[in-house]
Image (cartoon, rainbow, N blue to C red; front, side):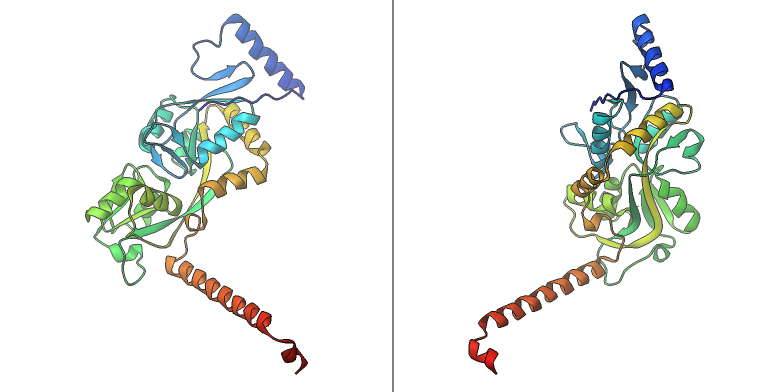
Length: 303
């Protein structure tokens, strides 16, 4: 995934930086550098997660897609960014590579104190709640019901430290991604999975799982941001500028393309269906009233 946007320099500092970039190019200093200014674009090594749909994931054909990929493409098209996409990996491997200075850009990441030791973060561009996922049951379940039982959670995910601290009595089973957690749930190796609600629906659809129950939110949300090396504030400024220049209607269109109502809500799913049923009944009532009015005769109006 590559994109390039060109902007005119408006401030003296911008003109100075542009002049320095062109001087470096003339001297051949940019060639061979893994990240930095290339022409008028800031070249960044982007490390995508392998399976964190609908935000970022690798398709069966090896393409990187998702809400965050579309955001980056839109930002690069109208900003000074050139994105070089690295091979997709699990998040834990990406974070380790970032620690070692091998990555310039990570998407779909929630800021945490541990990550802030070596990463900076942009403003969030989407927020989703984390939920508890189980096999279907008669009553909603909560994490308190899983004392002494295995529950899957993403290894290195922001929610992992939260649930481990708040629910130490649960037997936490770290997994590389939410799809692995759902497979363990289906096989009966864990009693539940903790994940964000959008990823749960996306992964379940890809795996063909129809018999899972999304319970209420667990009190943890994912405000997802772009992350960059803490030692490179210039990358952070460039990302923030590109985000700011992306019109809100365009952002909303991207969100709506990848997220529907069920993927953004942490409500009890039965409450959601009750609301839908209620709206359906209301629609039937309105339709009945319209039919009755149409069928009324002129004599009826005279009464």
